[in-house]
Length: 331
Image (cartoon, rainbow, N blue to C red; front, side):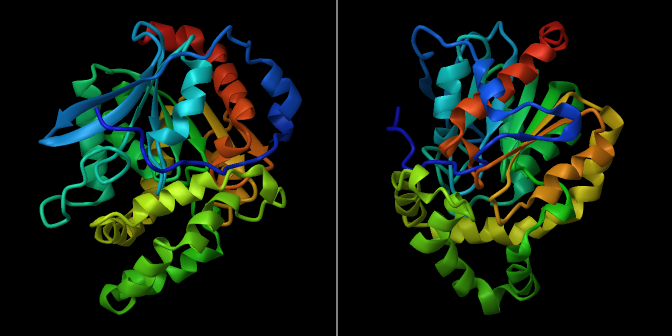
């Protein structure tokens, strides 16, 4: 087994500001997580899917409700390590690294299509390989387009949805997305600039902190590890392919919204309000299709668990407890 992923994940959402219908504050949410005598152990495992070795983390017993944790960019399952240790004594948590990310294999784009369609297909097969037929989807950033493709392809597998700055509404796209449109319209003319920016220290650091004034709350290792990962051989091409393909996620938003409205699964939306990429209106937009969803805004950036791990763990635990009978029945 390979060593832990070299990049961290998360400067999302820092501070709990509930919506009016589901008001809870940061302190009360955290208090609902019962302290464990010790953190739950996490296993670091591998499985092969279509000839690609997929690294993943696993905590908890498979006879308990399963959470499938899908990471963002340029992160990996490492972003969920703390959450898994906090909740692994009461749930079954599985967090894979996508191909090209973390400790999974990173085949050349010449031999592997780095599209969100393909990542979702691999993750679907991954759930079969690890014998996880039913699960709650926990989706952060890139996890949303991967997870929503999985949900629409195999709806019976999905028991519920948690979106942590995982956007599926155009209202949630911040101003930075306007800079992607020239790349999507003329890849050759803009690719080098996109690659340079995406692999840079400044952009990687900014992705974590966003507009959060609490700069000193962030561990610099979060982005320093990610920059090291991003600058490994072959990564520039992999990341550019996915950034180019992201336009297809936005085109799919209406279909995903329709799916959410039709299925009305139990849903938790946890959003970092200091995230300049996926802004707060994207969280609030879920109310249109999921009027019963719980929407929580945190005083944080793009990766909430960097600074608000206790709050995210508490909200996740509350969500799982409220729906425990339904989730247990679906095992």
